[in-house]
Structure formats: structure tokens, C-alpha cells
Length: 264
Picture 1: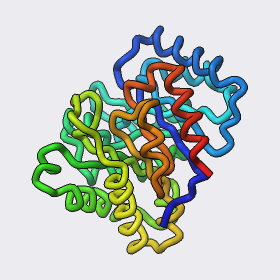
Picture 2: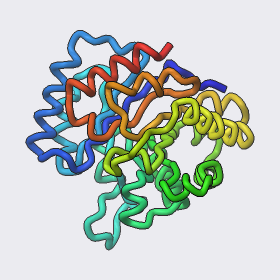
Picture 3: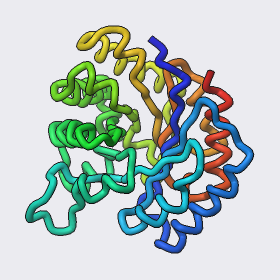
């Protein structure tokens, strides 16, 4: 079960790193730098902050193989949720949305059930959820990686049908490997691929081999130009979720080039 490599994906999560002006300038640079590239197997998804969604979407509207995503969203359509943003508010601007990123889980107490419910709601709006899962440093030290990611994946599947699951992207992002956590080391690529194979086996047990093979699985965690090939060349890896490196347009475009070159 190696996945469909032709569905290559690079997701740029800008987090809160850039100002509005900086995000618009980055989008303009991506538009210019992407000219002449033919990413036949790979799509780039740019996820700016909420205030810049419209401007970045407009800037990149005519760039082939580049689409817009949101970094997070609330599961409710409306309500007394001060400071939150609903799916119908982002729907005019995005085709993708990150769900369950570890930073949101830590900040808001977001749990696996809420992540799964939000993923279902996004699909109902025609938006592809990019669901993040992964273990913390403490869980890793306790040798609980398999237990944690298995539980997260099974909770997601509890809310899915075979047809819904075909519209979900899963990102394995070990919390301890995120650049903001200043990791001492990064996952061994073979170990990462083994975890991704486990995720596919869980899906296969629930919905069959075809569903498991079709599922797109990304790796996230301190991804940059110098290490992306080590991860994407492993079997079953469809692409990457990129954090801080994605705010540098030249490095981001080079990451997409490298991923596309490894996707067959």
C-alpha cells in the first residue's frame, strides 16, 4: 500500500510569521517564481493568516497548481464564539484547510473528536481537510507513538465513510519535530514511512485496500529544502506540510520542485 504518488502535495503553513504586507509580497513572489515551472504531479497549497486570505487568494488566482488554504477553522457555522472564524466565512477564498494542528490542539484543547467533526463539516462545504496527527515528545519518550497515532486515526475514521475518507489528506507531524519546538533531531525517514504505513493499514482495515492506497499522506516537522527529499522519497509519502521555510518564497518553490521531481 504505497499511495497514489501522482497526487503530490506541498502545504505552506505561514502561521503568524508575516505581516499582511509580508504575506501579499510573498504571494507576489510565489507567482513570479512559479513561472516556467510545470508541476505535473504536484499541487502547492498556500495557507496565509485569516486577514490575508482574500488578498493572497486574489494574487494567486491565476497561478496554475497553486491553491489557497486556511490554517484552522471552527466547526460551527455561526454563534457566540468570540475571536473564532467559521467555515462559511473562509469558504469563498479557500479550497483546503488545516485541521488539528498540534499548536491549535495545545492552545485551545482541541480534541480528536472535534478534529474529526470539523473535517466532516469542511467536506460538506467542498473544502479538503488536511488533518494533522502525531505524538508529543513525552509520548515518544514513553514509546507511545503507535498508540497515539492509532487512536487519533481511529477517532477520525469513526466519523468517516469510505466516500468521505477519499476527500481527506492526513499529515503525520510529530509534535516534537516541529521547528518551533527546536528539535534536537528529526524522525528517521524509514521510521516515518513505517508510521505512515500503519495509518494506511488502519484505513485498509476499515474501508479496504483501495481506500488506503488512495489516501494522501504528508509528512510535517521542520521540513526544508535540505531535507525534504529524504522524506518524500520514502514509499507512501505524497508530500509535505512546511512551516517556517514556506515563508521564504524561493525555498518554497524549490521544495515544490524537489517534491514534484520525486513524485512519479
